[in-house]
Amino acid sequence: MKLTLPLSQQQADNLRAGDSVLLSGTIYTARDCAHKLIFELLDKGEPLPFPLKDAFIYYAGPCPAPEGKASGSCGPTTSARMNSFAPRLLDLGLGGMIGKGGMSEETRQAIARNKRVYFAAIGGAGALYGNAVKKSECVAFPHLLSEAVYRFEVKDFPLVVAIDSRGNTIY
Amino acid sequence: MIRTVSTKEIENCVYRLARKAGLTLTDACRNALQAAKLQETGAAEFALSTVLENEICAKREQMPVCQDTGMSVVFLELGQDVTLTGKPLQTAVNDGVRRAYADGNFRKSICDPLTRVNTGDNTPAHIHTEIVEGNQIKVTFLPKGFGSENMSRLYMLTPAEGKNGILNAIVSTVKEAGSRPCPPVYVGVGIGGAFDSCAMLAKKALLRDVGSVNARSDVAAIEREALERINSLGIGAQGFGGKITALGVSCEIAPTHIAGLPVAVNIQCHCVRCEKEVLK
Image (tube, rainbow over the protein chains, first blue to last red):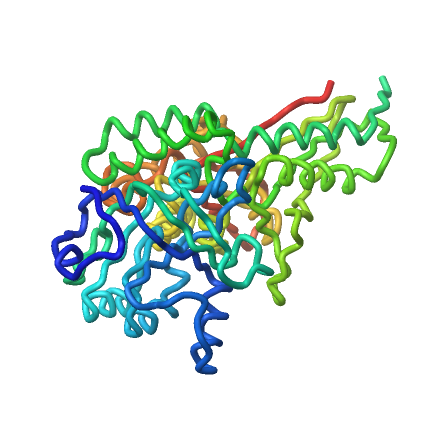
């Protein structure tokens, strides 16, 4: 099934844990350090590097882009490390997340409460995902290098619905 | 016969191995993934097909198979009849890593543990040097990802816990790790030694080919039984559920103290990258 972001509520609700999708559109990378800095901005009431409403965060840190490419290898990192951040962001309007591996019960409940989706990318498939990034721009924290926030335009990311909008999970 | 080797040769060797390792799975790993794929259906099969397709893409595009190009673990077996000349050995190895990670567009993943400031060039490498007989130098390069490293554990068991305790330690480590370390995993196990050397044995076990068997039959039995129990956990590729949760278990053993039974379990993701070369 092909999907393009942003997802309508109906599109999100039609997804079932275990479904395979090819996802296109705009996503933002953020890992441990970027989340910490985003939370500092939230706590200070300062503007965020990207609008949270309906946005998708990709838990990933790319390799440098080879010449002529938008991104280097860029598969998912372990989502569980972001369990302490995800529920608050979902409650603030985040559209969903892409990462690898299961997430906590608290995160699962936040996904269901907000009727959002968590997609699993296939860990270890960095070259495929990096190649599916068509445009990339660093939008915050460039000093974090690969851990900075990048806005990606992606085409046909192969993903599996890992937690659906009802809170059903594949794990 | 005493042989003189410039450390520049070692630097160039590290460079070659690092560049290749970033882009390639070991043959044994690829074979094990292909065999696993035949046994799975649904999301687990999709995950394994994607991973195999990814390696072809990595080769075609000359991009790393996984963006986590790892901590650079370098094992050097240095013949005692070798005299090294040129820059210090450690500098040479780090220079090889630095150049490979820059030229290969590999991710630089090494940072200060407190400030989290990145060193910017993936150094320092983790260098383990062993002095051996002869006048050859064997270089092994293992780019070690940390999604799996984070799930590794060390147990100080009592002698009374014996073989069952060892098996439980291995299986419970993989069970607790669940979907997080990119299963199907490769499990390196150290049995014996001490707190430090046991962990090193586990890492060394990962240098063996996936599917290889320990020469000692009682150790091989532990490898076999652990693998069976792990694959009955049902975690499957990426945690999507399935028959293959581990591609293999490799155990290495060393004498320990009469009071103890250390067991270290070092988890490696399904992306097993390990390159070796002997400088003759």
